[in-house]
Every structure is written in C-alpha cells, then in structure tokens.
Amino acid sequence: MSDLTLASSSPETSPICGNAERETSLADLGGILAAHFGTRPISVYEAGGGSTSYISLTGLSVTHITLVDIDPRQVSRNDIAHETIVGDLQTIELPAESFDLVICYNVIEHLPRLSDALQRMSRVVQRNGLIVIGAPVPMSLNGLAARFTPHFVHVWICRHLLKWPDAGKPGCAPFPVAYHRLVDPQALQAHVKALGLEPVYFRSYFGSLAEEMARKNPLLGRLLIGTTNAVNRVTFGALDLLRGDYHLVLRKI
Image (tube, rainbow, N blue to C red; front, side, top):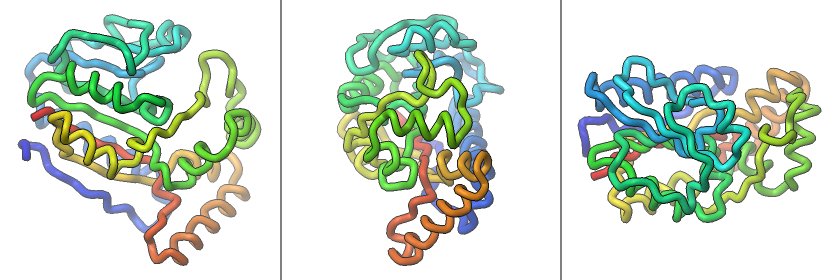
C-alpha cells in the first residue's frame, strides 16, 4: 500500500444527493493527487480525453499534458493539452514510463480491446505514478441501458429526453459502447494487478443517467428512481441500479 488512502464504496441512501456523491468523490481524487504528487513537476496523459478533462489539475505542478483520442473533432476542440494526437488507445505506442499521471475518464466502456488499452496505459505510467479511471457500473441503470439497447436508442434518449440538441452528431456524445467484461470494477481491479498496478481508491456513486433524467424530466426521473429503489429493496441491496458510475485510482508498483 502506498501513501494514498484506500477507500471503499460507501453510497449514501438518498438518491437526492446525486451531485454531492460525484462531487465528493471528485474532491477525494483531488486530495489524493495533491497528497501524492505535492509540488513536484508532473506530466499528464489524457487517454481518450476528448475535448476537455473531467479531473481538476488545480494545485498540481503540471508541466505537460498529452492527449490521445480517436476522434479528430474531439481533439480539435481540446482546451487543455499541450500536445494532441489522433490515435487509438488500444494500439498506440508511446514511450515507456513517460507520464506521472494517466487519466482515462468515460472511455473504457467504449473499447472492445480494453485489455490492450490497459496494458499500454500501465506501460507508459512511471513507477509510483497514478492512473485515474472514471467509468459506468455495468450492472446499473446506466450500464444496463447502454449495454442492451441499440445505439440509435441512446441517441434518441439523449436528444429527446435529456435535451441534448447535438446528440449523435459527428464528434458529439453519445458514442457507441462495447462494454468489455473488464469494465466491471471488481474484474478490473483484479486484472490490473498482473500489470503491476495497485488499486488505492474506489468509490461508486449516483449515476449520471438517473441524475440527468431527474433534472431534465422530473416525472420520468421520479419513476426511474422509484423503480430502481424497489429493485434494490427486493434484492436486499445486492443490485443497486442507482450507483451507476465509479472512480478508481491505480498506482504503479
């Protein structure tokens, strides 16, 4: 175990605190990064980072940010990277141990060859460096809706129910999903140990789909939350469909 604090998922009981759950976890991540890196200069790899970063780098002494994304439109809109590369995380070859911090946020669910991408991320991060992953929980409302409906349904939901006017247009979310088995957080944490990576933080939180649905379509949102809470009660908490996303931090040993 490193100097980072291991935290397990401890979801609150009320879905009303959806934003608070995510914000609390993001704040935890900020504290972990600050404690781990301090004021020393670091290089950052945004793996599939798209147009911006979800993780705040405020307070860190970041000297260089490299972005790799497969969509040239997303790359062209990026507002933080010093270096941008149009490339595939599953095949790209970057110099070994060249980054202190790798961020891969809302990406792994889109990769059919996720194990290849994980191997490449583990290779480019320096020893004692960190990899931060944000992803959906496969067995959740978010994950089930994405996995078992066609992509055009995702576009329709985002455009008409969530009120995203550009949904499905070139370079705009939602993007097709693959849901490799390693997206599951337990399977992922077990797998990365063979890559020399140590899980040091994990937290699941109220999912973005239920949260945004409740905000954009309150009636439908209440119906979804009520139904998923009923499932949670029936399964005695074994299936918590509302905890739809997670954060995971890995340290290279």
